[in-house]
Length: 227
Image (cartoon, rainbow, N blue to C red):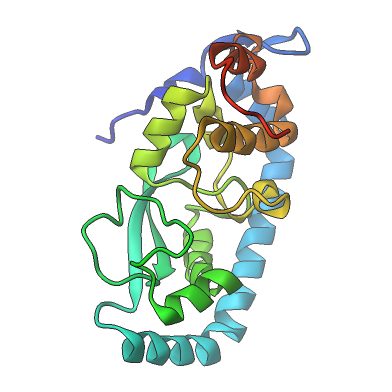
């Protein structure tokens, strides 16, 4: 039997929301069942088109370039945090030399672990294309908060109150944080909080009043906030 995550347990509990309504997250999600079904249909349709029309001709080219550039597998898979805190295997094209810190250390600017082809793939976002398979499998959506590796998810949750509430939606290949320029490593409180705040603008109703992000600003009065 699969172990129930803490977030899955939380969705049955009632909270006092910012609009003063008292109801569970489960009720909130059920009220938007129609929207979520349409979103899933859109994901399946779009992912199927990409897999059928783009994968057959683009993947062989990328696979040859990766193979010629460095030794190692073509694809890289990593456990990420998904919907309701469940873990799943997230797939990408390998952009780094094989190393022992891929699951614990974020990529940084001019990271020596990144290959020449990998740098191009990262700059263009092509390395994320295999995640359309994750979308088709139901692990991800096309639009949603980016999934974190396990270590980052634990670390960020310790820094920002209710950070785990971002897992009330499926993670996405792209999201509002990327559109608004929140890219690259999140190594400071300000960078972590900014990603949370941008996502919160889209999910304002989800956040219990007790977990308002402004409370975290008070907890870190010396942190620099560029927003």
